[in-house]
Image 1 (spheres, one colour):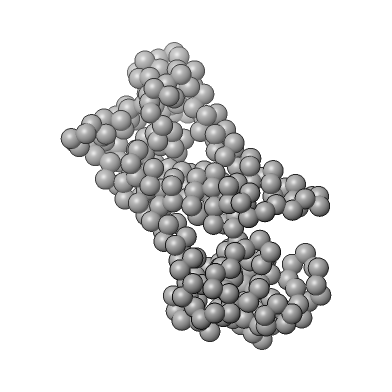
Image 2 (spheres, one colour):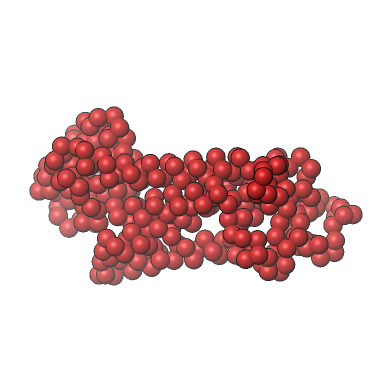
Length: 278
């Protein structure tokens, strides 16, 4: 058991696995965030022109057009996606960069629309992702490192997610068996800023700015980072003593029910989802 007593918050002898998970989530997010600034700064000036493509697709993998190169094809200005690349600095293919730079820009190409008007440029090179994604990666990093310090495996995703908060803060939700509402309702609230800023922008003439995109992206990334960490950390098999070994706030406990009958140890106050209070 750890000297600082952290293990007693889950019922497991230690939380080394949760620490590693949080460090991986936070480290990968922070690494890509830093690379998004460093790579364009180190590339020769004007290597990466103004881009405009789609999310979840490769648009600048080659200069020949077609699959993986649609961004380099001639497009009229003002389209919802793409633009006339010749008028925005010429054609670009991240596959022609060095291996590390190609990975950074290739990842950005796949995951971000890379619209130049919504992205920063460094040293005359457009960054690999837009400013919204910069905020998202920052939030991911914060969430991962927070989970590495506070998160514990508590069998279920929602209980592992809530473990980053002090037990006293969430005790009342456990007493009233409202922790699912707190966990997933809280995640939803973190998504509201980006939904409002991006949704209004998509439906009206409103155009956000770089600061708003970064600020609204951070809570979204934080929510995604906490959820990812909790998903990886939640591992019932670690509790060799079964659900009774799990320690929860307010002395609540997990109880498993079979399809035919409740186990004798389950109190009448047990909730339908298998949590009860002692």
